[in-house]
Amino acid sequence: MSTRASSATAFALYCAATALLVHPFIGGAALSTATFGGDARLLVWTMAWDAHALLNGLPFFDANIYHPQPGALAWAEHHVGVALFALPAQVLTQNPVLAYWSVWLASFPLNALAMRALARRVTGDEVASFVAGLVYAFCFFRMHHAVGHVQLLWTWALPLVPLALERWLDKPLVSRTLALTLLVLIQVLTTWYTAVLTVLLALFVSLFLWPRATLTRRHVGSGAIAALVAAGVVAWLARPYFALVLPPPGEIASNSADLLAYLMPPLNTWQGRWLSATMTVSLGEIWGERTLYAGGATLVLSVVGVFALARREPLPGTGLLGAVLFTGAVAMALSFGPSSSGWAPFDLLASLPGMSLMRAPARFALLVMLALALLAAVGARSLRRRGAIGGTAIAVLSVAIVLESYVVDLPGGAAAPLPTPAVYSALATLPAGAVVSLPIYWRAPDAFRDADYLLFSTTHWRPMVNGYGRQVPPTHEALYDALATFPSAEAVSAMRANRVRYVIVHTNRARELRERVEQARQGSAFHLIRAFEDGDALFELK
Image 1 (cartoon, one colour):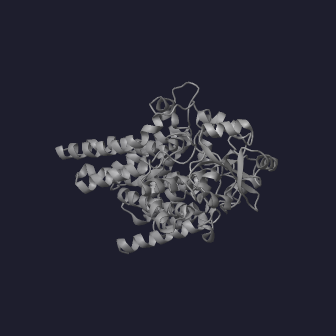
Image 2: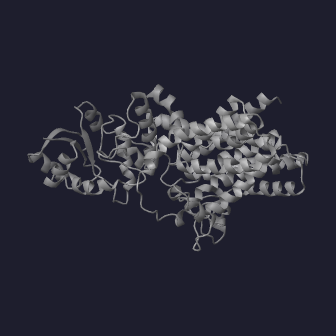
Image 3: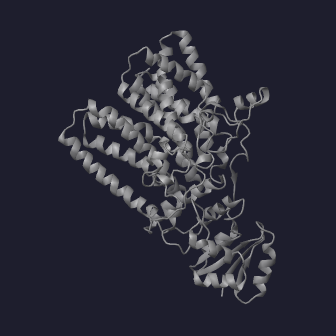
């Protein structure tokens, strides 16, 4: 089979695996309307805002949330590295939900193809590299983050960074310098976590490959120019975040992994259900940062790969393999999080500037899966040399890799449509002015529902007091408390002081607000613009 035909076949199989594994999350008919709550709606809004600001020449960080806070986007993440790829769908369809799903779905086959390219360089084997693509793209780490973290799915550039770095060290052509710079920037600008993972991977690959390379002035010149350009882009987008003063996170320990997290299947898998029914074991559900199950088939292939390396079976890319495996070992140690002694690898990393933002050490598991994918490819290559029996074993294990990640009984079910209430379309026709939507959930157990207002705001893009992100700005705590008393004199005073013109009240979200609506209608401070059949009311401050 030719290289082109082999790639086409691999792509088709990766797409088939994608269709199977995403079925519990989203149906094709719902791609333009359905979303998950909380972080997923935050991501929909973020990518839509990035496109809105870029296409309309608006100040990028002055997002329409947390009014009147300047530079409000810094209280979330910009996710430019993935938002730029959602931009075409956003422009063509004007549907931010569909744009979100376009990159969400594309991430799976792209991750597989990128990993396949790296594994093919290391092993020189088409079948083995195909297996590596399955492991990296469809491990349970992906399924765990599929509900609300598209930024952790969008990691196809990560396996290509070692490839591009090796090619650049071999010959620093302009095209290779540009390719390496773009791949690093895509991953660095996707999210802070993938930024740290990319830098860590590039550092260790460089350390492994540098002694074998013949460095020239062209390396120094092109590398310096690329580093300056990349640093300038990153610095401009990172500067607002370093200006924030965030409290020390308290959830790091609970978001750290342990060895069992990699070995035990979650309850929401077929094997997890079987273990729970046949043995007295306590298994976690899909949620939580500790859901890192590597997969039994992946571990079997990885063990075979270890024995193959012990026998010193020749490989085309031993330097790349050593660099990635070493990175994976370091990443696993980092994923275990802080220690009581203060000398764990994560403790040392967290002492560096900016590393305090790493609130979920378990996410270093992505680099662990990258290493396991390569090790599994080495194992598959070794089995291929065993003839028909080895080929059959590879086929069975490849199917198992996919089926082991299939999610059973997804808590909360598949993504569901959330129609934008008519009140927001009405708001879009009114004169300019900031708005607040009630109720505000920020101190409630269902605080994730504040993200609904971000999704709704994509229909009008008015400045709004509401927001959702990493943290509520300190200035908004007292403001939220005052506005929650609507239509009191305290709320009126807070609205005037912060230049808030409109109030949207969702009585169907909080029944106690019905009485507040009647009080506002009878009072003299607010003018009722319109009451809607679904229980919403739109007021203007007189």
